[in-house]
Length: 279
Picture 1 (tube, rainbow, N blue to C red):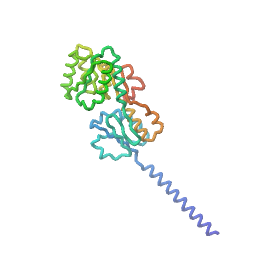
Picture 2: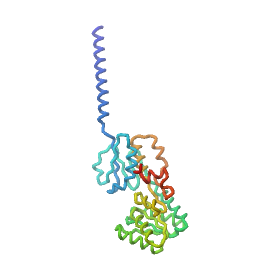
Picture 3: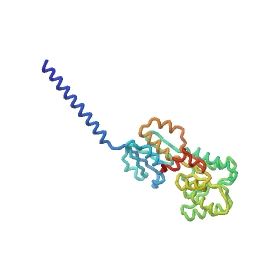
């Protein structure tokens, strides 16, 4: 009986030692485990164009031992990350699903504002080239304005800054159009500068996510700005990848855009989107 008791005690002691060793090992492993990494692969070499999305993603990762990185698609084969978010044409694709800007709703809402204006009967859509990039938006605008009985035309101007500004000045001075909708940063800048130089007043709307576009909205150059909510796209994607179950409720039925004007741009809702780096 004595021997049996000693055998039982021996195996019990061995079991306790093995359990203690396992606990120590697991604790050590957790401490040594590196941060969770999420890489956003974007369809552009201009990573600065995604600063708003990066700000949202970084804020979501804060205090979660998570590292956020943004790389261009040309470097995708070198990505070694726990999760990858692919960003293409204003949509995010990742293991938890897809988030996308509702372009049709955004164009429709901006078009309704233009149609409601008394001074916008002849409308010109302009960009600094790259017609293919904006084709979907152009088609949506044309359909909406045609239905409302407004004259609408699209002209791709030059990617050369000097030629772009001169063309925009000539168009505004011509009197052929009383409303311009600029589809990118460069055409917004050219349209607003030309409006300051001409002796004609034209109404200018913009569609862009750059800080320059926000500047021209703030100083009165733009009547309104259609602005994609890239901050929330980045924030929600990261929260979902970090397994925040509540964030799904937040993302449901989101259109991920705003139509901002000078009255609304400093509201609590819009300020974090238009000025993501202002604390």
